[in-house]
Length: 109
Image (cartoon, rainbow, N blue to C red):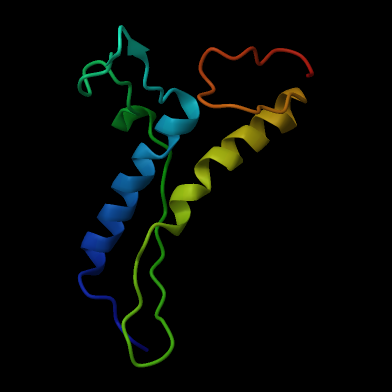
C-alpha cells in the first residue's frame, strides 16, 4: 500500500476547497455595471463562512501501480448538481440556471 505524502495537508486542502464550492451554486455571481465588474474583492462577493460550511469528510486512498496518484478536485464538480437535485426533490422545481439566490423555489415548476 502506498502512502500519501503529507496527508493532513491534503485533507485540509480538500476541506478548504469544498468550503468554497457552494458559492457558485448558492450565490456566486459576477455583475457588470457601466462596463466594470462590481465585485472588486471578497468584501463585495459573497462566500460561504465557516459557520455555514457543510461538514466535510475526506478519505485518502492509495493508487495502484508504482507512481503516486494525484489529488485533483473530483469532488469540486459534485456540489452544484447535488444541491439542485436536492431542491428538485424537495420542491419539484428543476433549476436551469445558477446562482440559486434570487430564484423562486416555492411550488412545483
